[in-house]
Amino acid sequence: MGRGKSLMRSLGEFVGHIAHAVRTQPEHDTRRRTTVQTQHQETSEGRVTLRRTVIEEIEIERNDQAS
Image 1 (spheres, rainbow, N blue to C red):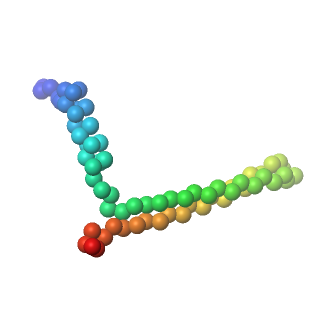
Image 2 (image 1 turned 180 degrees about the vertical axis):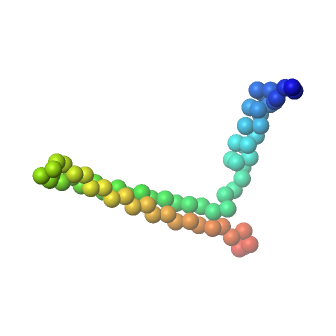
Image 3 (image 1 turned 60 degrees about the vertical axis):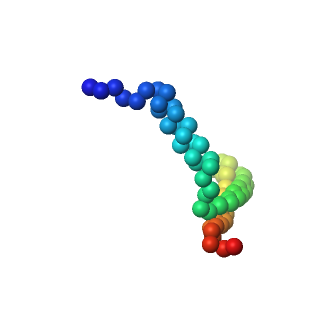
């Protein structure tokens, strides 16, 4: 059985992947806003929590051909 990659080699590849991701421009930009509304109600069976979660996303696709 041959030996696998050394720890330093694996660490170097990992750092290389992270550095590449930092340098690369994303193709689109996503903005997200989350709103949570919580309301408590007392009922004959006990306290009930009503929760509404709204997630709004805006996705902006970059057009590299526009000058």
